[in-house]
Amino acid sequence: MGERAFNVNVLPDHPIFRGVGISSKLADIEAILGLAFTGFVTFGVAIGVPFAVLQFMMYERPHPPAWLWAVLGPAGLLVVWLQWKTLQALGVGLEHAPHPRPVFMAMSQPHWPIALRPVVAAWWLGQLTIVVAVAEALSRSYGVVNPPMGVRAFQLVLQLIILFMGAYACTCSMLFAVAAVRRSEALLTALWRARIFIDLAIAIGVAYIGSRLDG
Image (cartoon, rainbow, N blue to C red; front, side, top):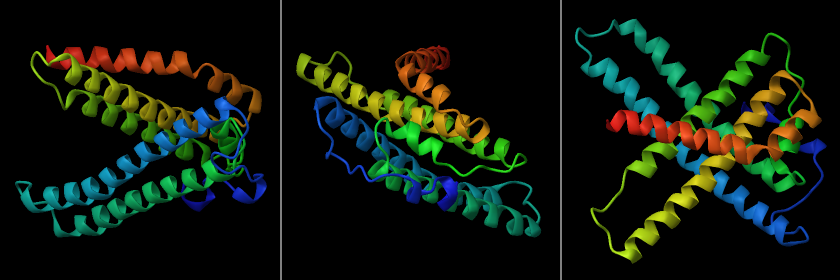
């Protein structure tokens, strides 16, 4: 959260696309897609949270008391600021951390006081939830009835890109949440290696929820 999400001074310098091997290049592409998705979410939060506060205060009936502005206003701005600092922290970490970048980024968090650890973990789990919700909404927001093969292929490619972007962002948030509570490189590495199963579980869960909502 904020500039303290991790200390880049403890990270060696491993610039994007400077690694050796195809796997390194593919990992960097995945990282950039994940960061782009997080940027999209940040933009949505920066627009959506102030708009939701304004809409609630102006159109809710009966009108909320005026003093609630002093609560919701700063709280909304704080959420937007934290979201921006989260995006900024992830961007800096991707530039400096070695592979696997999310593991080292999560490990480089400060040792949070015990009382703050659940709060930090909850913030990152909230990031994961938002990313899943946005990915699910995007995957359902477009569609063509009986599309020709070319259009269908384009839709599948777009869904695949969204999947990769959302999966990487979810994995980063999950690792940060775990590391905030328990700083174990072995545990984080194991979770990173098992991310395909975690992503599949999330995708299946999202598909199930979407089918229930459609039904």
